[in-house]
Image 1: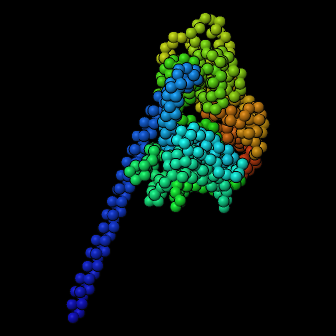
Image 2 (image 1 turned 180 degrees about the vertical axis):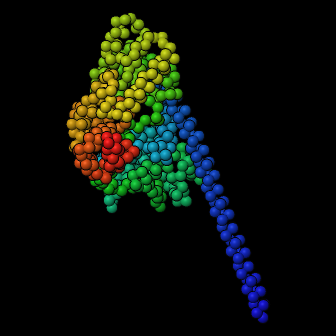
Image 3 (image 1 turned 30 degrees about the horizontal axis):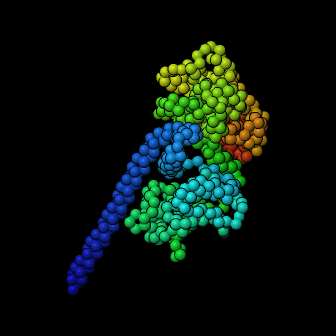
Length: 549
């Protein structure tokens, strides 16, 4: 009997083990299959998004070359009423295509955490009014009214204005595809969070699609819910931007029809530490220096659209190109854009090249930007006049594109060499180098101003820009272009170099130097010092002592 019981026990144990092993293997296989599918889906998604992003980059330049001459033709206001109507259709659809391209590039930037984010107090009602105005004509064409249904005349909240604009713009674009007669936009504060609602009076969206609406490239099947087509990216981009605010977007379909999209943005916490404050400044600085890509920005100022397009196309492979038709338009662009170099014609309407050159070089906010003059006027007096106005180079027309590219590359490379030498030793640079140009004079004055206030913890870019009688944004762009780093980083670089000089004398303790160089706390000072010099202040002192012994 005992043998029988042992045998049964062994059989049961083996059976249990086999079943357990089989289940474990089955579970592992399912996990492997799930991971494999997830990996393949991610691979397909990455492949798709990379493909579309590359296409978007390729399309953007030709689109820009369509928009510029189209604007010229429309401004001329020539042709029949039918021609003007057709031009408006071209403009509307070109802008739509450009908007789709920008959406895709923004989507990729957010995914790679490269999207500039600048949360500040803004009037949300004012932002909503601007978005509604943008869609007024489109809505009118479809006989749909868009109404701001809010009793508030002002609603201040900490948001990224550009991001919120994009969120609401995409929600309105989506609502226009579904609405029959009316779209309502509302904003208010509930339970310490901002809520912006966009409601349409369409047929509504089947709840089974609600969870997938914010997936990239997702579109409701046309057969089930026939609406105007879209890219499938707008809502996904909006959700990502809402999450960057620490919020989200929710959708619901009321029984009486339509769809409601509600943006939730929580109240921002107030941060009051030195390191966190610097991080806020760093985020603020990103918005002012963000470029469409990492390429240097070149502004081409030329009234001839064909020549302007030709130069832009030749430069587009290595540079990001901005275009203006004359000097006055170019001055307006300089206020809005970051520009590394200007190429300008002389004979232009509104403001000619010599007047434009003089305006740029006499303005402290732009005087650092290198400027190349192109002109068919090859007489010596005109050349001398151009150079006296501040032009860095004068090139005769007709010109060799190879010569122009070589000149542009030379100027950019010289600027980069200047930046690198400056960043290595900002305080000793002018003891070793002659003053090369206006930029050198500016940096010498900048260093002196920072050193005058080096022990003032509250001395920031705002204080510095006031000393130079320039706006914060223009001053920020100038420092970034001249030094290659943000103003906040440059101030910190001067503080750290100054602290290293003090420590090398052997007269001061680390804690004393910390406050003498304008740092809030010794721990934060040590952290910054280590990041810059690769060693802690106490180790730096020891190294200096070892050298002197």
